[in-house]
Length: 331
Ligand code: ASP
Image (cartoon, rainbow, N blue to C red; front, side, top):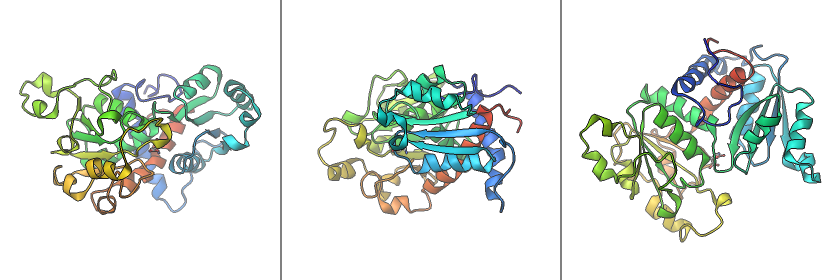
């Protein structure tokens, strides 16, 4: 079977076809079982080297990539910006070229600026995996979200997915919008007007939710992205409610008056969640701000799959490292 990536890099979901996305998810399913074993280690990537190059803070993603590499027996090295030569004035490309000279098989990069992984992919012989680039993409997050949804809903096609919060600055939202619409889900986004773009090229449908609900033609039903003026409209009848963190580190002006007001108008409470389908699931990429974008009662409820997302993240990253270093979807 063909490799699911057109190249060995994973720079974004935007570059992948639905078939390639399914290929990665199916491969991740195969790796899941290893994480449930008592001895969580297989020799699949023995002799391969993975460098985690993180210019931004990370708890889940960095640990998850490191665990994924180690469970596949790859040698994993972590570089954080404070200990690197960039602090001494070296350019990003020079750093990449120097790391590349040591022949790693894969470089996992997170950076505060959009496009850095793409820049490194041009000069590096190692496979580049995007672990989050500014407000652009976070492909492995969307893949682990998809794995969580598939596990609990048995499908993605035809699901109604509400994404709530700081859409504008969220790489998680972008990657998810690409992935979910490619796999046939209907995505509705909502949040403060200042944080919900209306003119991104991926905003396929711009009608208000109410209008969409009355649609009857099949072609219109296929419409996969809707901007809702109210959070309640987005959540109503949803199968999946995905809550985003306010990306304060990427905001340079006041997008809403106070956190308290944000929580009152946009926070996910049990009351708002009751508008969704009875069996709706709640996702959050973490780190979550309890009491701001999500109430503790929701975060800790049985409908919340936040820790499942983290669990599946390891399997997804195992699959991504495996495929990026030459594995095939038939693993
Ligand atoms: N951990 C995710 C990210 O790095 C989500 C977040 O930080 O809000 O984008």
